[in-house]
Image 1 (cartoon, one colour):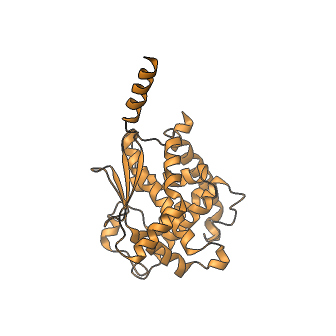
Image 2: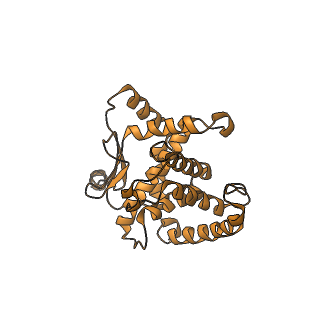
Image 3: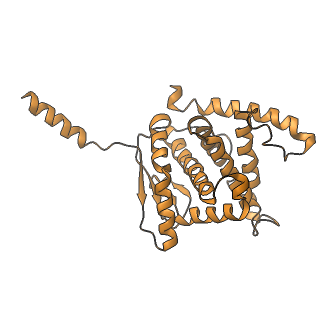
Amino acid sequence: MKKLAIITLLLSCMGQAVAGISIKMNEPQSPEEQQAKQSIERSGINQALIDLSEQYFPFESDLTIEYGAEDGPLYDPSEQSILIPYAFYLESVDYFAENRDEEESGASAESGAIDTMLHTLLHEVGHAYVVEREIAILGKEEDVVDNFAAIILLNYVENGDDVSISAADMFAFESQSEENSEYYELGEYAGEHSFDLQRYFATLCLVFGSDPDKHKHLLDEVEEDFITDRREHCIDSFETVNNNWHQYLTSAE
């Protein structure tokens, strides 16, 4: 009878779906998309994201990350899914190849694209976590989840500061791209995102604030008249953002 009870219990447990993040890799539609799919799979970022979620921001409901979607990157609350086109990775590779010297940086365009992908995944997961935990947002949610991504990277990911800097670089590349170099379209002033260059400096600000000694030259492009105040602000900003987000991360519970 004891053996039967144990078997019944095991079967019961096996029948219970475990909530959390799951990954769906859609069939690529071109050789380039196949390459993107393989690069994402080899990078290990999907498992890294799942591990981070289980430890620091677990979900009680299912959340699917779907690669190969037509739209995105975006979080779809109606389907509880995150949509990531393979084209996003391919475009990121192109941006890094065109704008960052591999020898000088010591990092390939592909690694920059993977860093950007991890930051983007955390950003979109941040939207889902805000909904899951019913976190009150006072301000732009897009800025809040940018901060979420940076805080997770800087606290819990090896070389997370480098990943964050790559993601910031991507914002700068997009801001300097040909279609955005002269002006922003009127609709972007009414959009939910801060401008790419603002997101660039905001991310660098958190990286600097997390370790000012290590990153003492990170904000050197800021004008000399403002650099001292900006450095002090970034130290305070990181402390505030870090403390506030840790009210909702399970490591603080």
